[in-house]
Image (cartoon, rainbow, N blue to C red; front, side, top):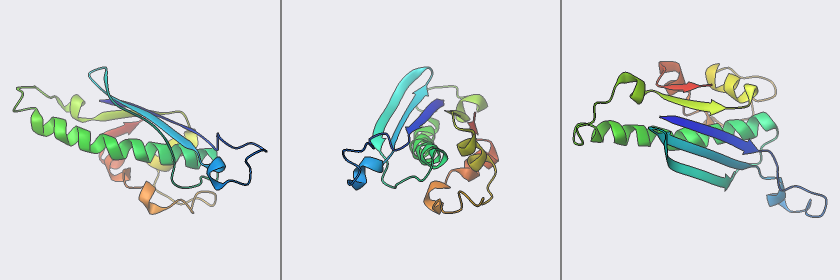
Length: 137
């Protein structure tokens, strides 16, 4: 399984609507593929206001993996019923992210001065990265 995640940091903001709180929300977009076939694609506004591009990308990455993990579990449970031979490489997933700061936050679970405010609700997937079941490139 592979996934591609990307975010648009405060993409709706402009001078005309700068008074509206929703104008500073970032947009998450991600695609989850199984055997080179898209099975889930999402484009939605983020619920929290991101303070940086790294934070917007990290929130998007977290949302993507939040959908990826249950899909992996379902496929793993259905494999014997459907006579699918799933190898270890199929169980492992690769998520592609284009922001080095978000990748660093996902791989190295330590707090930094500029990102210590990011809520724990976005860090849920770090255990999967640590175990190696989800690889972030």
